[in-house]
Length: 191
Image (cartoon, rainbow, N blue to C red; front, side, top):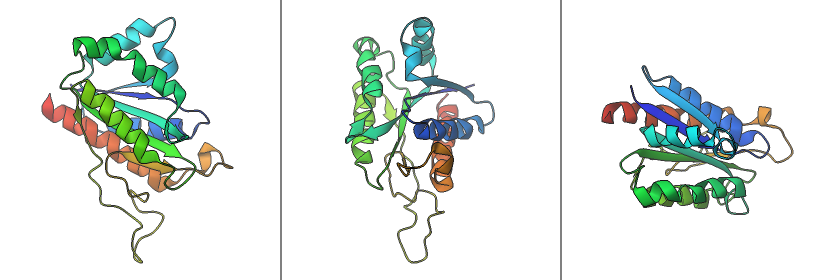
């Protein structure tokens, strides 16, 4: 059985909903074990168990909203705290992937995903991309297409800043689910 861990931060609920879609995709893989962590779980009581679970996972998927052109401060704190695992290369050869959400269609989400991929590279992890063609990029496309935002390195979502998480694009959530399923499938193959 391969274990896929999802570590996310969400400020207003949108990225949590995206994280839940990633989790649902990973759980759809037969025999997959899926761990689901908010960044708060890596501080205070219970933090040691959460860190130990990441050390044992076969794959870690990172997710955060893109604020001011990069991952949220809370996710960056988590990323900085991974230095102990990095020093010992405890995450080397694990799979890694990422997802992010912002209010604007671009919103500089790519920068957040590049940050996650660089974190993974420093840890010696193997990055798993989205492996989807861009959607909604022709006269035949629609807002309902998978990968409607047109990212490749990870799952991207766009959420209107004046609406709650319940108004998120179903296509973006389906794209996130695809990412979770892809990573858990690859983790099972490598296991």
